Amino acid sequence: MAYGETVIKILQESGRTLKEKGWTRFAMARDANGDTCCLNSEHAVSYCLWASVVKGWRTVDPENEKFYFPFFERKFLDVLQLKFGYSFPVTRWNDEVAGSLEEVTQFLNAVIAVIPPDAMIIVPVRANAKVRRRAMGSSNPKFDERSAEPHREPAFLFSDAWALSEMRQPPTRRPCA
Picture (tube, rainbow, N blue to C red):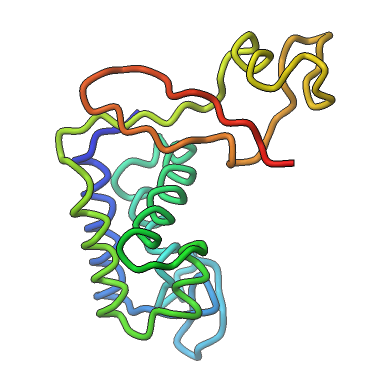
């Protein structure tokens, strides 16, 4: 769980990183020679949008890293679809569509604009076994009846849940076949 204010700080930190260090495409980070490098490298002099956001949450709220990846992945996709008419992940947008740091900054500002600072944001990690059994059906081969626990699924089971006034868990979505 996080608050909108924290998410906004992360995005602002991301923007600062891009302005101070530089923006790149087709790599998480680049060194002074333009070669790719790890985003944690001391030689990194520029970052892609996603790497700058990762650096942002690791600076502002590193204890909740598992929360932020699925949250930002979903929120960025929503904003790209609604504001820019783009239906692919933000990493692809960064590499194939964004043409300048200014465009990336506009995108970050568009995301900040849709986040209420006082919002409580909940992204459920996993639904409990009973809810999953109902949603997926007990005959589903991905459900292990012996342990009464579902097998671990990728991030598509996370949902974007803006619980502005209540602490409630959104319904579990069935995976596409």
